[in-house]
Image (tube, one colour):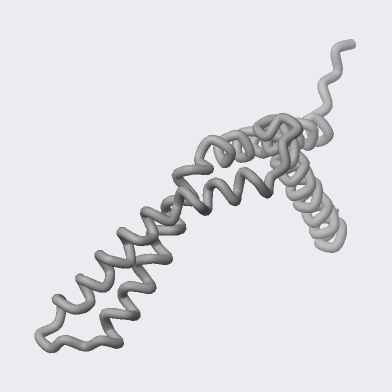
Length: 128
């Protein structure tokens, strides 16, 4: 097998892996949502992530104003925004952790199936 054939084979296999992962992720999302739409779930998660965002903004602003010897309003605002973004992201991740686990598990299962298929293509078993 020359380089061109090997690279084409590798690219095709990579595409199959990506497609199987995406298919598995879609299946995991559908299994978790059970005919429910994703929008209301994300909207509820965003509402519940506001408290961690506020706590993060407060802690960031407080840390930004206390950390240096001089008190800078722009520094406190910047750290407050950063803390709010981190808190919001953490709140979203925590609220959606079960859905994320379902999506990741299903995607990994599909990837393993594709890897097994590739192995059997490369290593055929002759039972006769």
